[in-house]
Length: 396
Image 1 (cartoon, one colour):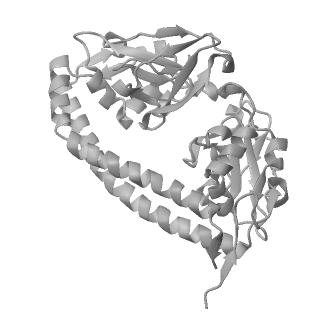
Image 2 (tube, one colour; image 1 turned 180 degrees about the horizontal axis):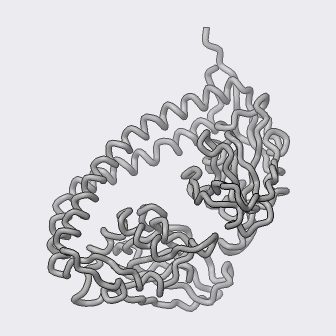
Image 3 (tube, rainbow, N blue to C red; image 1 turned 90 degrees about the vertical axis):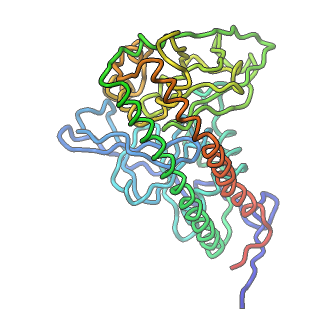
């Protein structure tokens, strides 16, 4: 017989909410780096995109006096980007990696909490609201999650049997979503391969300095106390631009923002090397980005913004960026405009760029269908999470 456990996952319901420190306390496994030993540094992507291995280097290359060991099933928070969903569960591949002082790692008590259940909770609107509330500040760079605030946050702790069932359901759904995404990715990879094949064929080895094809062009908008400024961000790995909420003039210490314009190539100075670069579409023109984002325009007769918008989405282009910004630590990650413009790039003449754009436009109807599928796919798991954590009964 199937039992039904009454589990209200809202704050006012029957499921107990306990401080995170009681069920998943902060753990600091301190390592003094051995100059000759090799370590893999772990990072956490924003928007609940999981972990990634930043670099594998010898201890002598770290500038920090202490590193922190990561274990499988640690719940990891970036203390400066947790408010943006930089939360992830360490997997088997992350076992033995290290984090810096900005990485907060919590070890779950397996007798009370399923680590995956807790990780899913922080993807819900309720969980994200708590992370934002525990990360005070008026601008992104000051929104810091402290260890004390993290430990005080309350999380739902229903019976383990309920947690386990919820996790199995979510994992099965995630696998179906992954299969759909994999099919779409195959089609996208074929399109990218066609683009690069035409790119190199028509360029015929022609190399130019990127600064000969595009130039820095920024429209500064002075910030006023009474002003409202809708923000735009840039996702990494070719994810494109995305709209964020507006902020008021009193909510930032910046004196000016950059105003976007259609066709602008928008580069994140911090994450450009990992593909945080994109072309501004018409619908985001006149929105704003912080000075950490730089905007470039194509020079007449030299480059097409539509073409450059396609090229900057490719891994091939990101590799050119990475090669131009090699360095150590945080310096490795920041792309200055002069570095960007100094890249030597294989590039076809403008006429050939426009020919390729016409070829790519024939794929537009199919890409539109893929975009619609992706949008529906992307909404499925968040909607399920919200429904599950808000439900009053969970079968067990």
